[in-house]
Length: 216
Image 1 (cartoon, rainbow, N blue to C red):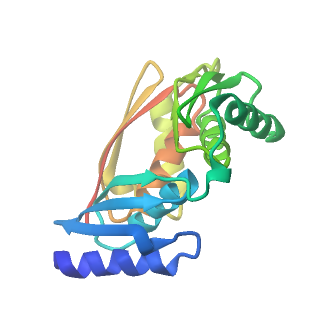
Image 2 (cartoon, rainbow, N blue to C red):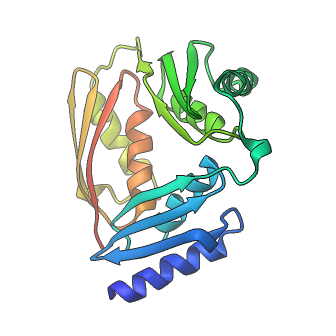
C-alpha cells in the first residue's frame, strides 16, 4: 500500500467514526507510520481519533500530535473545579479503587495513588478523560499486586493460546520479578492489544514492556 493510499484510508476512517469531528484533523503517512495533527474538542475525541487510525489495515504506529482545544468557553474550568469533577466521576465508577487520587494543572489530569490491577488504572484514565474540560491525562499510579506470581510466563503463554483473537506463535514472553517483556510480531493492532491485555491480567504482574511490532 502506498503512503497516499494509507493516508486516504485513515482519513476515511476518521470521517466514518461519528465520535470524531475530523474537519480539523490532518493525516500524514510514511511507510506505515501515521501522524495526526490538528485540533479536537475534547481529550476523549483525541483518544478516539488515535484508536480509529490504528484500526486501519497497514498502520504500524500512530504519532498522535493532536491538540485539545475546548470549543466553547463554558467547557473551560478552573483546576480546582475540574479536579472535583474528576474525583466525583472516579468515585462513581465501581471499577476504580478508592486508592486512586487525581491532581490537575492547566486542565491536565495526573492520576496518583495505587492500584492492584492494570484494568483499574485503564478505567480511571478512561473516566478522567471523559470529563468535560480535561485536555490531557497522565498517571503516576503505582501498581501493587500482592499475589504471588508463580510461573507467570507459562500462565501468560497458556492465556495466549486460549485466545481465539490472537496468533500467539509470533510472540515470546519473559518474566522477571513481576515485569513481563513481550517481543515478536502480530498482524494487527487488535492482536497487539489482546496480547497486552492478556499479559496484564496475570496475577503478580506490575509492569509490561511492549516490544511487539505490528507487521502486515
